[in-house]
Image (cartoon, rainbow, N blue to C red; front, side, top):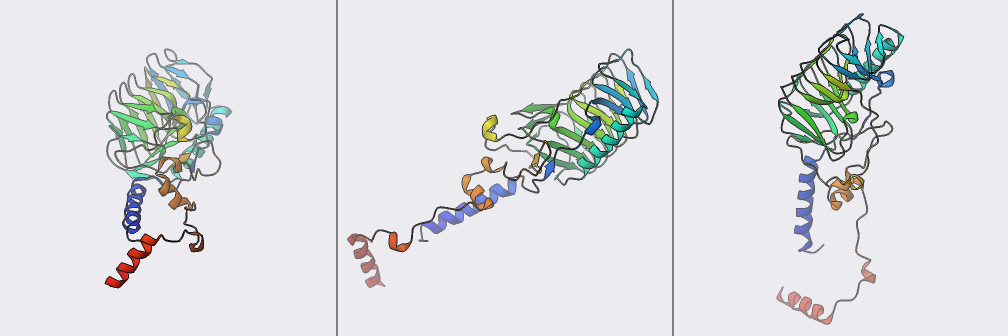
Length: 311
């Protein structure tokens, strides 16, 4: 390595370190949580499900082990109603599995308000609580998992926006106690709360689910539409996504929906090639053996001889 190459290599190493410091590479391990028989449910409560106003539920409604479902009508359920029956019991068991799956993965620690942030697929952990007072943007095809130690609270007219291939079917909220969606909130994703879920007047989950393990689901003139399945991640090139997406607070653990092994190389196409090569051990181009190199020209010989005499 000559003297001119050394500064270039040093600068490259420093640049690589800076990219890695900002890139979400903590675990690359999460897979889609198991919804099982809870998949068909848009609303599932533990103690009660109560409604006020013209709520529309696109999907099944279930309650277990409670027995009080009130407010339908005027609310409309475009699916089955399962009140403390075998289907509701199986869905409740499945929801517990979903909750445990979501709680089991490590993620990027965050605090404060989600409003104004743009996040890429990953696992984001809040201790103890999360709040949203404005717009949260989710950018890119992949699995988004939000974990709170206690509560999730959204302000009036807050919203979650999906861009660049992000899907509401691949968004999950694990809530340690209770979730409250403020009036007019436009939320997406499956909310699985340990205790209760309250949707204030005009809040919506499109697409999404409201699954409360032990407490009540309280509704008031809402719309909840059960999502379809969460498809597998495709490459950034296939979706037309940008090569890099910047989060205003850093990034979470990259995750792969659809089950199966961890997605260990999905980030590679989004970082500079030399960074990817360094991390995954991709061989670099090397100069040929000394015997195969062309002999130095006479000018080079003369210059080297002059330098030797000066020394």
